[in-house]
Length: 507
Image (cartoon, rainbow, N blue to C red; front, side, top):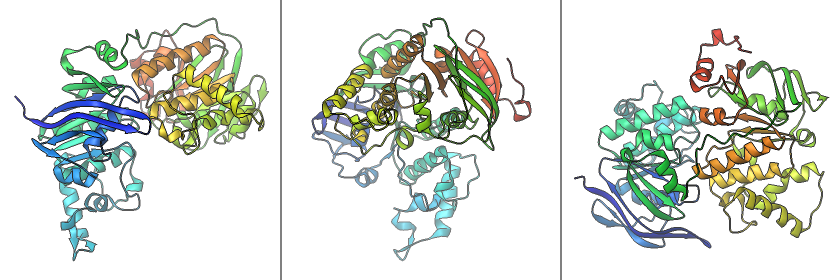
């Protein structure tokens, strides 16, 4: 029987008027990989941050290695042997990899003031070897030059350098490609084989079943289940997370006859991003765009929306021909776009929730002024429709969980009643229950006549929702597949083939 490494007893936590955790009892065993799952707002990240000293708890107790502990900061937790890698990395971009790793190591300084660069370079290379990092990376390379996946590995190496016994990964795959996820999982398994205990916070079911030995479920701040992963089915796990049966997640497509062409893109090009791309979307149709990260999917739809300027080609929207010069022009043409990065491009996170919802509506109505009552009514309607969890519409948007922020972005565009809706990674960061509701909403919008252009890295999502699928590779559209002929294998065969063959297209 494994020893208990960490125990929480009756942990509670409030944020203002919201009780995030309601008496959580938890045990983590030495040397296990344990998944901590739940819908957005269930409390899983809050609990992880309490364990790692990011947040203080209101009541209850923590034990680590059979001794009571109280952490007033992450430094306290690190000293005890607990490290966390958050979604927002704690790295200094203009410093090197080695400097970021050893910045808090007193023994790495000469005379107490200057980092011994020779020592930290050598130690960093040793850590690379220890984790089996295949990529030859210069320890002097600045963190700002690294990919998101590489930055994440640097954060993990920091934890290893501090002799952490418990590593917490909070939604570690949220911004990673499928290839980067595989590399991360290889690293996690390597650390696990060396005896490290890992808590893996996620809402992605495939990752739970691929990586974890045990899964603990939170719902509305309460621990609902503690499963041995190998002994449960995805359906049982979903039921425990959302508290109900939601049916087949990927069987939501109920389409009516498709109408006339709403959007026609012809030979659209932007140097170094995409070349000679042509597609069309019709009324009541969902057209998916698939491809690997870097294939040019996001760049293409941003150009269609006018957020980036295309250099060649034409965009025809409901008979009006011409490349859109700005998102405002797109909105006025009855187009809407949910962007890939909600925090940078979808929200003004310091503004109230209701104002974020009304931003596109104001642009469409050319600055129309509304009374507070009318604003509240419009915003509340979207809160109900999308089941957005918030206590006050006047709270800032950054007070919401990631999934609820995404719903606010969607609500902003739905208020404009768009004829063409572009969705770029619409379910990124959204939990399984909210994802099902969003799928039904997207399907319902198409059934009521909206034309939808869907970009997604999740192949089951693309296959479940799309009437037709365009596959991109190295900036080119290399295949057009009907719903009937598309499969994960077919899409990947086009998306992953060498660029020398990327001009071939199946029409």
